[in-house]
Length: 356
Image (cartoon, rainbow, N blue to C red):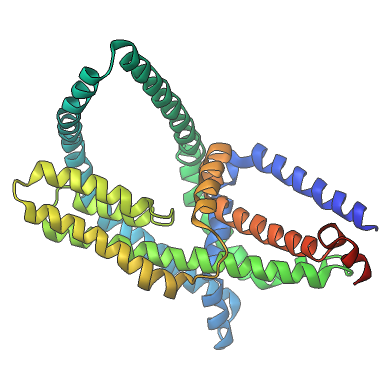
């Protein structure tokens, strides 16, 4: 098969896969979660298998421990978080009113300095922009909600995900070996090299970033609870768990934490302590956690990650959010590979490339 035909073959496969992903996205969530769990826990299964435990028993032991720990954590946290959600529902209207009371004087001053026509144009433009943003966010959240929190998907997560995770984790090495045997012989070494690079990036980001998020969730939640902030545990856990989106976790937590603290406390010391919790967490993440647990060579720029997560959520709902980072890693590796080939080709080198 010529190079052009191979390129067309892979492009056709990519298009068909994308179409199938779009059509089947409403039912893919438990399978994607199961694959993620199996991929995340595969190194532990390999370690136990190396110690003489059969793959089946190792898989059963690992998954039983994993799901029991997850269920126990949810049972312990849900009663606490339920009260925190009610507290937050009471606090949010007061925060909105406080924000409005502080912003209105600046708007009135701006209105006094500008002509009526200019102010009306600014207000109309701002309203249109806010409406567009709200419409876009509503669409994204609606897709995520309909794709990830529907009753059917919740039931399938509980019933199907453990089964998928068990069989995939048990047969992981066999599945990867079978796929490897299907690679075209002429390009198999190149494909294996790129797949190894993709695996390194995904493993470095997913496994490492998951550890970072858990540490930050514990740090933020514990710190805010010790300060006595209302809904502090909820805000801290939420900020930590969304820290896989660069800068969003600390920014979200700092905004909501300070807003609640300003309404709750009349002194500056607790407010400063709330800010210190998030500044400490962000410093720890930047200089200790991320370099040690994730590494600085995963090849995924923060802007690329943010774009991938938003695009995945907008296109395929919650399933797209879960697939966003792996797909971004694949695209990044393929782009770097194509760029490397281009820089060595005659298209870039011109006549020098023809003589080399």
